[in-house]
Amino acid sequence: MAIDLQKLTLRRLLDTQSNDLYSKLLNQYFTGINQVLFNKIKSFYKAHMRLPSTDEIIALRKDIGLQEHIENQIVSDENNNDTIADEFLIAQLQDFYIRDETIFFLDKFIDNLDDYEKIEIVDQFQNHLLRLNQAIPHDDELYDVAELEFFPSEDDFKIYPSGLSAEFDNVNGGFATQELVLLGGRRGSGKSIISLNLALNRFFQGNTVAFFTIEMRYKEVYDRVLSIISGVPFLDIFRNQLNSNQKIQMAKAKIQTFYKPNDILENMLGELEQKKNFKKFEQRIKIEKPEFKDNRLFMIDDESLTINRIDHYCNMFTSKYPKFNMGVVDYINIVKHDDQKDWKTQIIIAEALKGMSRKYDLTLVSPYQIDATGEARFSKGILDAADRSFNFFPPPEGDNRELENKITIHTTKMRNGKHMSFDVFMDWSCVKIDPTQSALINEKPHSAVKFGTDNENEKSRDV
Image (tube, rainbow, N blue to C red):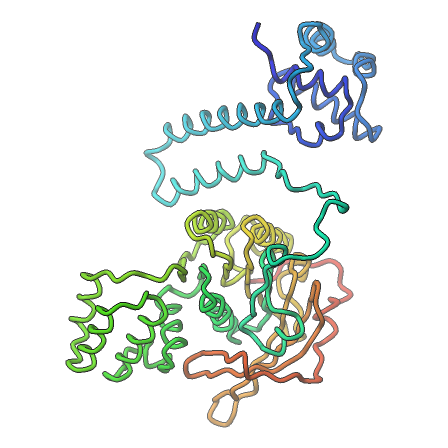
C-alpha cells in the first residue's frame, strides 16, 4: 500500500505537536482537503500559540467532510509509520511541490510561448524560480550559541575597502558582504560617478562586480570606466575628440585592467605605438581573443530594470564567478515596480535589495535622491533596510562653474559602525575618486537626515 506523505505528515504533526516540524511546513506542500486541515492547524496555533493535539482537532467538529477525513484517513491505523524521519517527510513534500509547480508552469508557458518576446521568456522562468525559492525554507536559520566558534574567522565576515575614503575604512573597515549601502545625493550631484568608482575599486581587488544602469546608456558608463582607469579626460572620450597618444593610453589601461598578460598583447601594444593603426589593433583583438582576467566587471543596461531582473543576473553571476560579491544599482528610486512613485513601493524595493544582498552574499550599493536638508526624497523609509547610508555634497562652483576637487560626505546610518564626516578628493576631469586623499571634518549633517522629519504620513512625490 502506497504511503500518502501529506496525510502522514499531518498525523505526525498532531501526534507529536512538534514546533520544529511545523516551522518547516508551508501551505503549498498540501493539496485539497489536506490543505484545509493544515489551515485549521495554523488557525488553532495563532489562537492558542501552540499546536493542537489529535483529540483537540477532532473536537472542533465544524466541517463534516473534514471531520470524516481526519477520523477515517489521518488518524487511521494505516496512516502511521514511525520509521520515516521528519526530515525525509519535509524533503519529499518539497520535491513533490516543485515538480507539480514546474509541470504546471511549463504547460502554461508552452501554451503562451508564441506571445512572449525574448525578455518575457527569461522573466517567466525567473519568476518561477523566485516562487520556488520562497517555498523552500533555508536550513541555516537556527544557531545554538554554545556551539558557535569562540573566535571569529575570515569567513564569518567578509569586508572590503570601500573605495570611498581611507579615513572611513580605517575606522569602520569598509563595506561588508550582505550589506545594503545607500548613497544619497541631489540631482546631478555625481551619484552615478561615485557608485562607479566604488564598483571599480572592488573590481581592482580581484572581485567580480555587476553595475546595473537604468538612466545612463552602457556607452556612457563605459566611457567613464575608460576615463577612470586611463586618466584620459572623460569629455574627450565622450565627444570622441581623442588624439593618438590618448588612444594608446586608453588601450594600455584597458589591457592592463581586464586582460591576463601575455606576449601577444605586448607585441600588439608595441606595434600600436609605432604604427598607430587603431582599426587594425581592434581587429586583431577580435581575432586573437586574448584571455580575460578571472574577475569581471559587467554592465547591465536596462531602462526597465525590475527586482526580478536584478535577481536573475545576481543568480547567474553567483553560479559562474566565485568572487562575485558586489552589485551596484543605479539607482534605487527608478527601479521599475507597480505604483513606483508611491513611498511604500520605494520601501519594498529597498527591502528586496537588502534581501538579495543576503541571499547572494553581496555588497549591494545604490544611490538615492535627497532634498535640500539631506533627507531622502520619495520615501525616507528606504533607509530602514540600509546597513550603511551616506549623504554627499559637491563643493560650490567657482566663477567659471568648475568644481573644487573635493566632495563632502556624511554618514547618515551606520549599522555596526561609527558616524563620520569627511572630504574626499575627486578628479572631475577623469571622474575618479582617490580614497587615499581624504580628511575628517567637524561639519555635521542636518538632523532630518538621520532622524527624519516630524511628518509621519509620507506621501508619494513626483519622480
